Image (cartoon, rainbow, N blue to C red; front, side, top):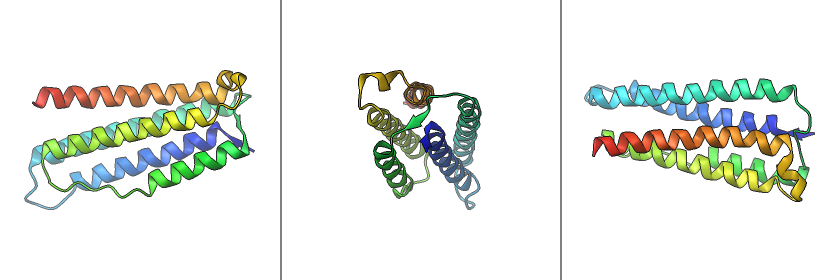
Length: 158
């Protein structure tokens, strides 16, 4: 049986990938601006906070009922998550604007993935009342907040 927990774990993997990506940047070679490294470290910490938030959400939803996902929906969802995780992502230039643009695009892509997943959960009207569907709302709200936060930083830097 597939459940919301499988989706949450997929997003925990995505957050861990992003965290590790930013962490590698923060620890990169000499010659990189310290402000760039500091921003990368801050983004890594933010992704880790998301990871921890999703882990708490997972623990909470392990105790709930009605978190099952239809096998046909799960098949599509798991393929979407795998494709997202396997999409190559790199930063071409070590500057503040590049990493902020990268972070914003990554979060927007992640949010779009979540919205697509949530849409795939609905086959009948009652599906929008399931704990699986409603549980994704928490993750969506968290990602929307992260997008807004990065947009505020970008606006401030301009």
